[in-house]
Each structure stands twice: as C-alpha cells, then as structure tokens.
Length: 521
View (cartoon, rainbow, N blue to C red):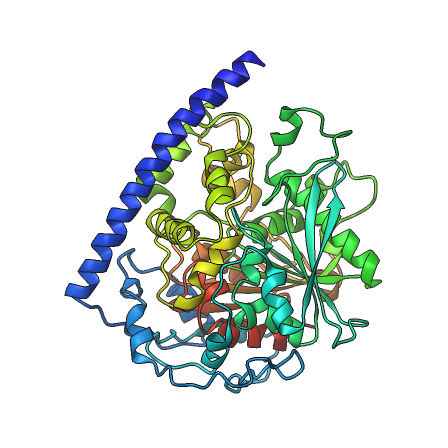
C-alpha cells in the first residue's frame, strides 16, 4: 500500500508537468495554425466518389496531416447565409421542422461490386438543409443531455446496470410521451475512448441519436465502466486493485453483456442493432471475432454474435494508423505507460477528471479540450458546426484505467496491445465470419465456427473516414473485401471525414444517418 501511495504521488507530479506542457504546446499549435491559415488560405478540392470496390479500396490512403481540410471552419460560417428565421423554435418531436435530406438511392443488393462505396467529399462552404435546426439550438453549456432533449419533448432516462464483476454502468434511454416505443427496434450506441454516450447526442437535432429516434427506433446510449462517475458494487469491488484492474477484454466480455442483456430483457426483442464509434467498435469486433476465447468462462451462454442482427462501425479502430508513431506525446505515453512511477497504477491521468469536475460547462474547458485533442490527433472542426463545438466536450473525458491504456499502447512484449498486437487479436489473414460454401476450396483458417446461412451472422455496416490517420481503415477494408463474404458486409468510404467527423460533421445525417437507416434490417 505504501509503494502504491508513492507511485500515485510520483505519477501525479509527472502528469501535472505532462499536461501543462501539452496544453502550452496545444495553444501554440492552435495560434500558429490560425495565423498561418489567415495568411495563406487553403482551398479544398472535393474528391469525386467512385462506387467501384477496387478503386475505393486502393484509394483509401489518408492525406498528410496538413491536409487541406485543416483550414479554419470560420470561412464556411462567414460564407453561409444566417438570415433564416427562428420561427417554429418550439416545434415538437412530431413536427421537428427538420428539412428532408437530399434523396438517396434505394439500398443496393449486397453483391460484391456494390459493398464498398465511396461518398464524395463534403464541401464546408456549401449550405446544408439542417442549418435552420442549428439556429434553434440552445447555446447554453449544460453537462446534461436531458436539459437539451427536454426541449424536443424527449426524455433521457438514466438507468444503472451492474456487470457480473460489480461495476455500475450508466445506460441512457430516449423516450417521449408523444410516441409509442412499443415494437420499436432497439439500437444501442457505444462510445469511443475517453468519451461517453453523450458524444452521439451532443449535436441535438443534428445528431445521429436524435435522427435514429425520429426515424422510428428505440434508442439506448451505453456507457462503459467508470465513465463520468465511477460507481461500484462495494461487496464485489472492495479495493483499488479491483477498481482499476481491467482493460478492453473486460469491457468486451462484461460491459457489452450487461448493457445488451438489460435492453433485450426490457424490450422483449431477441436481438438489437449495435452501433459503435472508435473504441466501441474495437470491443465489439473483439467479442464478435473471438467468440470462443472471450466467452469461454461465461456460464450464461451469452455470445454477442447471437444477440445482434446489425453491427454498425463508425471509424472502426481495428488496426493502428501512422499517427501513433508520428506524434511525440503519443510515443511518450506508449513508452512510459507501463511505468507506475510515471502513470500510476489506478486511474489514467486523474488530473483530467479533476479539471473536468472543476471547469465543465465553461467555454474555456471546451476550448482547452478541443485544442489538446486537435494537437494530439490532428482532429479539427472544419466540418463541424461551430456553434455546437463547445457542447461536444461537455461529456468527456471519462474515468478509464491505466490498464486500459496499456491495452492500447504498451510496447511490453508480454502484453498484447492494440498498437503492437492488433494482428493477433484481429488476424487479417483469417476469415472472421465463415459461411458454409464460402471459399470452400481455400485452405484459410477462421476465428469462428462455420455457419450455414448469412442470417446466422450479424450484418456488418462500416463507415470509414478516409482522412483518419489514427487508425488504418484501408487494412480493414482490404480484409473484408479479400476474406469475408460480400453477403455479410457493406462499407462506405467518407472522402474527407476524419475520426470524429462521423459523429459531429455538419452533414453527418446525410452522409451516415440516411444510408444507415435505409440499410438497417
């Protein structure tokens, strides 16, 4: 215990200087980028879409980190007309004053030449049919989804769900007195690393969560363990080691099980649609691909692969991208994350949560959060609605364990981490969803038991941001087009989207929401 206390003191001192340096560099980077863009504006050149699977797959290579989309989004804001009326601001759920998105083609059959589609680049200077909704959004910063959604006649009910090992998860459920949720197909949305379920809903009426709800689905927002407020069953989780000795395997095996089991029991549906972003796709694919390994000790016969009929992967994080080796601070974290003297043995960077608890709801906190992640991961707000940007950071960061960050970044050869061992967890030379009579003449191993029909596997729908350098989307697309049956999956390549644009881009409803709803069985 005394050594653990020394580790905590030492790591807090190191992390204080680490975060201070990071914020200073982030501010300098933001200032330099802003002044460079004003002096020499860069013009976006939209990439033309191509529906050819071969072309879309081979062209899935991100541009450099200084890509054209990094210019300030303010130019789009100035070029748009903001003269729309605020009338009907009190329109309710059943008449949301929501312009119909541009017509989309009807879903195509799942044949090989059509399973990979490239969507044309978004032009940040053009208007979009959802601007009127933006003008109606409340600009006040309140760290509560219920505050915003009550304005749309939607209630966000918060439930506490316990995992088998004693962690209390926050599960949010969208309901409305204006609609009957009976017989609505359930959808569970699962967030990414250092985020919470609020990321799917922070855009209000322009969010995927809201669009799915008004499209007739029963929407649930799931949070992994600890989250914004760490809660435990103290009879099962008795000390600090048990509180923080968990990683993505536990989240894939236990958190998903607790969330999905509760939803299916409540709704009386046999299966649901699972939508994940980033880390949410990682833990889901881990459970789907490695069924026998993940659930070998589960005596309840729960298997994720049998509980979902659709799996939607937004910016799937299956293979590491070049950014993990290019950014100094990411390399530093990778090399130091195994040291208890530098990063401790319990919560990862607890100072971040201290700052959030102290500053959340202020513009300063949201601004600092944005510039830090912009500096670390090359994300920017070029395609976001500037009025909503501060709201997006009300629901992050969250409590995570240092063991989870070791799972992502550790170079320790005794561990299997995402950065150094993704090929072992997600073997791209094996078939993940083997169908009887598919590649029957090829001597290729599979990770799951062979099944007779495509209906025995969940359908996989993936949205791959072409400008995402945090993960390697091309390698994942290559795997599916070379090894998996084209009857199982469909892929959309988003030409100028990056990792967070799949949640917060101004045209996310048109680019993701519309084709998603059209293709959900």
